Length: 234
Ligand code: UDP
Image (tube, rainbow, N blue to C red; front, side, top):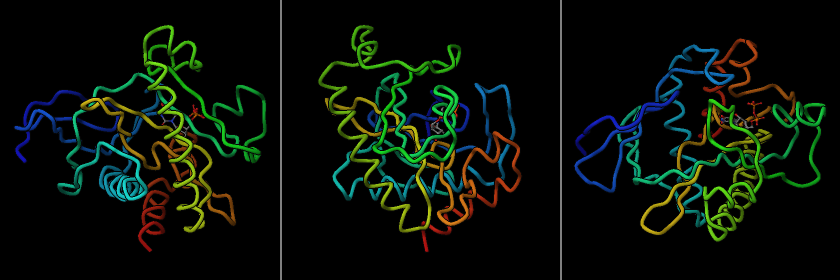
């Protein structure tokens, strides 16, 4: 598939057109940012690892009936994806309290939630991705009621699948972020699923094996990403 024009460059990825108007190429970079891009750095080989991890997780989800934008892996850093119109909502699913939820409600990180929590954040860095609810999303025309119902149903299903997958790899899926997009009348899971977008803790030691090592300067960032991939493919 020939790479065409660069149509989007984000913090961790680039998206290119292809000769097929319905397909894009998503390229994973080593660049890392945190705190609305006020902290910047690179994580060696992160792009290669996140491409592989996302491929494995999209395949897993597809095998369980979740439709995603993933088509195929092209090489180390690139995957072919279906073109979608991204819905400007970041869906956060939480199983254990951490990060934003710990801050918002002054809770201790590590508190296990009695049931999963779904949050919508409006995707806008200049506003720091503010927490909103489905009434905001609906009233501001970000998505229709039917779309929101579908996104909600898919997000809980995805959480069940991923949580149990990672549990078998001795990893706790603390929380993660999803993005969805419209493609030919359907809502597909889009973006990526990787240690950039998930919090993953070792089941025995609670060691953080995700982007928090970069955000919080904990060291061993590259090793943590490699460890997640190693466990996933073991
Ligand atoms: N997350 C993400 N992109 C964002 C914000 C959050 O992928 O722009 C992920 C993050 O890695 C974590 C989950 O979403 O797994 C919940 O993040 P939270 O809302 O706690 O925000 P943070 O503490 O990172 O500010």
